[in-house]
Length: 128
Image (cartoon, rainbow, N blue to C red):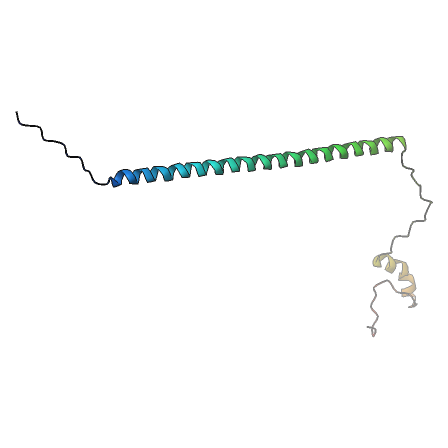
C-alpha cells in the first residue's frame, strides 16, 4: 500500500476568513442600526397616535357641548316662544300696469286726439 500523502495546510494569512469576519461585523452593525431606527419609528407613531386621540377627544367634547347648547336653546324656545309681531295692515302696492293694459285704457283718449299721456316705454319722434 502506498503511503498516504500529507495534507498541506497553508500557513500564510487567511484573507477570505478575515473578509468574512468584516462582512459579519458590518451586517451586525446594520442590524443594530435598523433596530434603533425601528424603535424610534415606534415611539414616533405612538406619539402621533396619542396626539390624534387627543384631537378626537376635543372634537367629541366640542360636539357634545354643541348638542347641549342646541338642546338648551330648543328648551328655551319651547318655554318662551318668540313673540310674533303682526304687521299693521299696510296697503298693497298696485300692480304695475303693462303696456298693453295702458294702451287699452288710453285708447279712447288717443283716438279722440288727446296726446298728453302715452303708454309707458312709448317712443316719441324727434326725441332721443
